[in-house]
Amino acid sequence: MQLFGKKIFSRKRILYAIGVLLLAGIAVTFVAPAAKTVFQVHIAKAERKLPIYCVDTPEPKVAISFDAAWGADDTDELLRILEENGVKTTFFMCGYWVDDYPEEVKKIAEAGHDLGNHSATHPHMSQLSKEQIKKELLDTHKKVYDLTGYEMDLFRPPFGEYDNKVIETARENNYHIIQWDVDSLETKINP
Image (cartoon, rainbow, N blue to C red; front, side, top):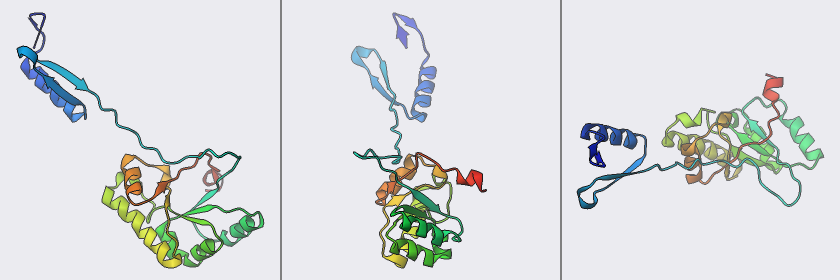
């Protein structure tokens, strides 16, 4: 390639650079007006998809949720406290928890709380393929539906970990992805 009549890059270096750009996901356009080659490089910035962390409301509100991936010893007490205070919440349930505590799942649903999906096995979702993510979602969805008749549409990724693939797959399966914006840190207090 020449610039102002001087050779500035060899053909080999140009092809190498183009290869690196293409591997990095950068679009390269070639324009050859009047026998002069011009390279235009377009860096396509990937849009980072985000889950729902909070929602603006006209009045002050708090949404409380629980991840049901632990034992069930305190479920009755928790449901009693919520009922006494007129509070409805979302319980994000793992498939193995649904298997272990089907009566608790029924109690939560009968009390009028939202049921959310927290995956079948609590994996690091971003390390899974789209098909594996879909299976994690649908296995738990079916278990909860078969037990309660409830169609879940909320999903909280285990460990709060997600990437575009996790969000896209959840959305393709009719789920809204929900995170938290305040953490009680109870796992740090009571490990």
